[in-house]
Image (cartoon, rainbow, N blue to C red; front, side, top):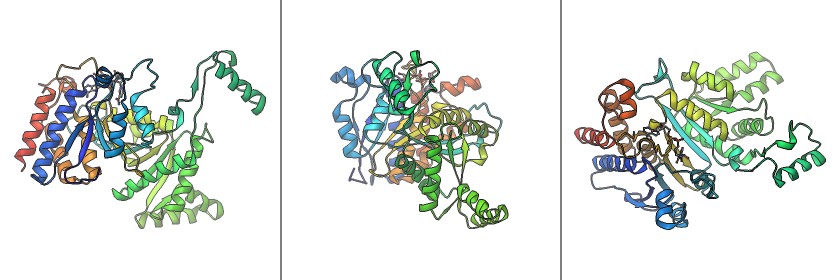
Length: 411
Ligand code: NAD
């Protein structure tokens, strides 16, 4: 993507409710850009195919041209895609992320006043998750029970590595969980860079290193080591522990107090299961979270539920080194409500807001965020929220039109 004034942005409409939420998103974003920059800047949208639409038109779920377009233009946006069953793909989303090495899945989670939430004080939840996106059990190295691969792997484990702990070897399926130093470091770096840019004061590494010492424990260790070496703006609890071991707890406390006074980012770690209760009990304590792939999957959805669900939670998959990024709705295709005008476009719309921020189009992004805040505060909501509050609902299109009117009225 070379043109910063009139960039070509490839978009994948998506399946199920995809076309409805995409149409709504596109018109709100275009209105905000037009309101912010008049005719000086605008998006040149380029449709690319994936999912059912691609399959129906080209016979393949993920045409090569789609990947090539994202590679060329770098930044793309997409609606949800049906996961094809038995077509040799684990998931189109996972394939896209792996092909483009989009190693950071970024999920900001905040509360919008008016949205129904299961929490008493949902406004206390305001954090951004950096989920590692290319490793862990998502690498897809898994073999079914009874297969030749499992037999080979089991005999290797038993004969070569003296493994005796597979409880039921004859009926076990086996999977492999790769977690690397490089993969952990680049993810943690993304979280730290974001914390510095956004002037946050705390980053938390979430892992399950108490049980998986070398994979999840490695993530924590490599993360801490990398931060200690490369981020003088941060003070890690790992460093705190070193001081207290080498000297005294008082000295470590002093160093921590000094770091706080100097405005350094405090980096600590929490074990994943504990973190799931922490975010319910003390969500206000956490700001930026860096975690491994599977933990990140659970944590992102749990946090989304705290602030109103996946219908309103945006996401982006980014490679900060190459600049490739796909901004996407975090929910699925919602086939149960497709075509009814019930779909909430906020997840895709807020992903587009992340895209505007990523491109530095902050004036436009603020206009969209403000319009969404006002709409929800005024009980202008799509079916999902309206039915919970027992209030009158807006269709997906009406909701988008309400946002556009609000953006235009603010001019
Ligand atoms: P889903 O997210 O599509 O739906 C779960 C529930 O949430 C449904 O009741 C649905 O109506 C509701 N919902 C989801 N998005 C909504 C929105 N924007 N507004 C209002 N309600 C909304 O999950 P699922 O049913 O498990 O999956 C359906 C399909 O989507 C599957 O093929 C799955 O593989 C795919 N999927 C794709 C993605 C993606 O492309 N990123 C993510 C998850 C699932």
